[in-house]
Structures are given as structure tokens and as C-alpha cells.
Image (cartoon, rainbow, N blue to C red; front, top):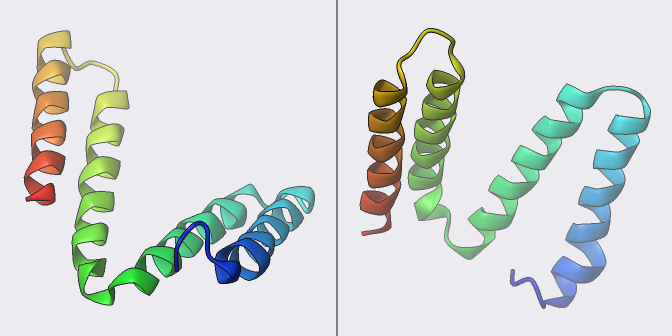
Length: 95
């Protein structure tokens, strides 16, 4: 499925937007965020499901790095090293 395909424009995108805003309106923000995450995984798995493991690895690395960067008490030098590691890991995943 491509961004310009009919399936995306007339089915996938409206369904995703409707579910997200419905969940936000019912004040279930966590479920809304999870729905966007699941929608992203479904969208990218339409292209080639064999890359899902790489996608999940990238999500895990980025989430862990982001959480570690947010922690109080880490020095600026340590945060810079962590950021460089996260960027390098993402670039290595590209090939």
C-alpha cells in the first residue's frame, strides 16, 4: 500500500483517523497512541512483512534511547554519547 493508493486514501487513512480521534474524544489517550502504533505497523507490513522484525527493533532502540535521554541525573556528555549511539544504530539498520 502506498500513500497515493486508493486503499490508503479511502480506507486506511480515514479508518485510522476516525479510530484515533474517537479514542481521544473518549479521553483514552493511551489507547489512541497504541492505535497509531498498530496502524503504523499494519501500514509498513503491507509493503513487506519480512521487515517487521527490523521495524520492531528500531522501535525498541528508539524508545529505550528516548527514555534514557529523558532521565534526570545523567550528564550532558553521557546523553550525547547515548544520542550518537541511537543515531548510529538507526543508520546501521538502514544497511
